[in-house]
Length: 244
Image (cartoon, rainbow, N blue to C red; front, side, top):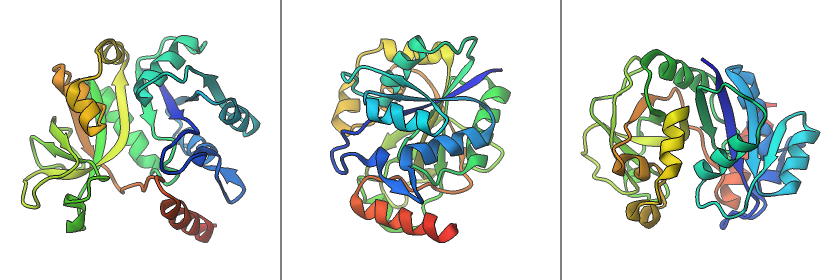
């Protein structure tokens, strides 16, 4: 099966404007994510963006990028437009990788892709165990509840995604924002309008569940930290610069 990784990215982030082009070790955040995606070696990698500056940066660093509309409500809708514009064909699976997670584990990308191939699932995503109890109340951390307890061999269905949940809620995990779509399912997903709960909680995965599209969840090896604020950027910059 042929997989294409698409990384949606834009400069107009509300909490940290311009973050895709902020540099760590001389390389932009978006290009760090691009390099991680390429390192996974599961297929071609494409950045989908509404900003020419991001296109230029990606191409300067040896990657492929597509300029899209600035009217999209979600990253998945942006990805679908990029698919219409790319010359890459015969795609079976589309991996949606977050453009603000330069510490994403390459093995997690590979394992999600392999699980999708092995199980013929419609949509797959990742989650990690919640080790810090404070995260249950933290609404910037998305939680997912699964039908079974996660281990490194199973791929159970998600029951729901929430921003706040009870501490003793069984089979509840920290959602990792990476998705893999079967191509036909991606077409189906973007054909539906945004659901009320999707817009209320700003969780596009609720559009899938509310339209009876199943999402399977795999246990991640590690939890990648996203860059949403200046504090996040400083923390990740320290980690990445220390590693080198």
